[in-house]
Image (cartoon, rainbow, N blue to C red; front, top):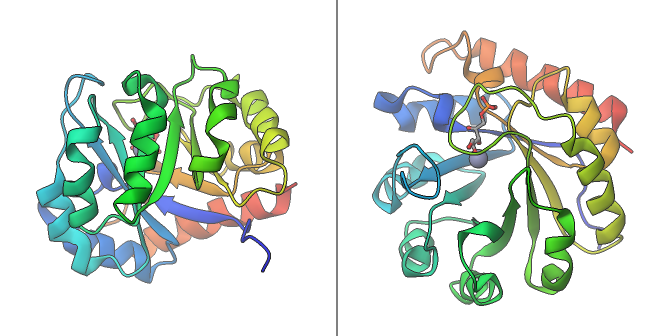
Length: 230
Ligand code: DX5
Ligand code: ZN
């Protein structure tokens, strides 16, 4: 079976209405989202605090697609079982989060989830080389993690292309996270990314009870990316 490298849009609910997460998740899925991206921040690994396993468990019944949990926390290992138990399909840990990322990735798969590896803009993609057999996804940060609505770091496009060459035919998704919109989406798709996280570009201008702008944004990002896909 060929690995699905078609463009997938993963709206980041960091840009959604925090008081209405369930309805927001249902709305973006009804409007075409392929995955739902959940940004977990601990105020330590990144200078912001969002939510934890309890919130993930609360939204799980409202996410019918893929719950893609991006952990911007350190340490990671003590919390893997809690996020797996909350219903995460994919748990992504940062390579910079601790000295034992090999063990962390094993533990994520051991908990029954797909394992993702995230790389900050300052980290060379070569850091993923010894871990390719342990991962299902690499998340290339195109902003410094911690906030939505930041500007896209163009220097990361070359890193995505290098990673795509490194992965070859392996069944590993390349996810891009930060500053993705209809202008930057073709750049990352042409370089080899297949999962595009988008927060402000999707949720801006809409609401759970007025979701049409979500659909228009998702369709625009998907069309721009698909047209440029390598
Ligand atoms: C940032 C998060 C991103 C962020 C993306 O640390 O990991 O997922 O929410 O938001 P935008 O698309 O607005 O840059
Ligand atoms: Zn994220």
